Length: 136
Image 1 (tube, one colour):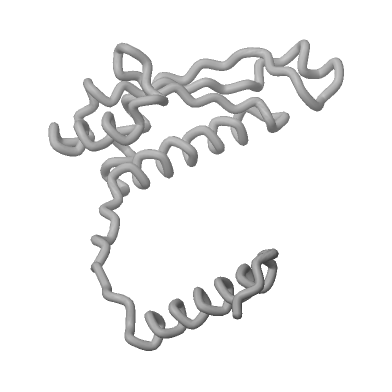
Image 2 (cartoon, one colour):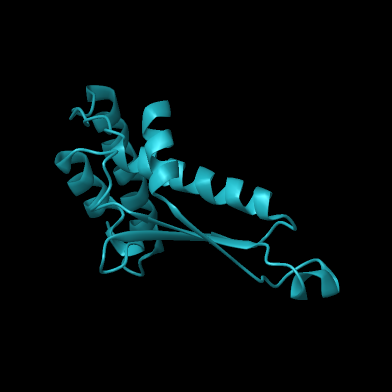
């Protein structure tokens, strides 16, 4: 994973701009907001198979050109915002490439079936008692 991180860091495009939020007049003077762009289609960090998986799972976060755009302006320093963006990028990519467990189908136990039927009978008796008809 460290090799992939090194490749990603070389391929990512970092842009700084002025951000709103905390900092008062300071935010109007210094460009602390960081926006990073990472093009998945042109990246050499992943195989074609991995690229397809990432594109399918992160499709709604990608631009038409295949760029993954992440920005952060919450912190007062460029360094912390850059660090936050890179962490978000790594977590998005690693979560997209994770293989989930396959669900194993199970059958309900005899006891759970009996319990369900008992509960259904109790509910039906309640409803019978509520009805206006008197059963003789």
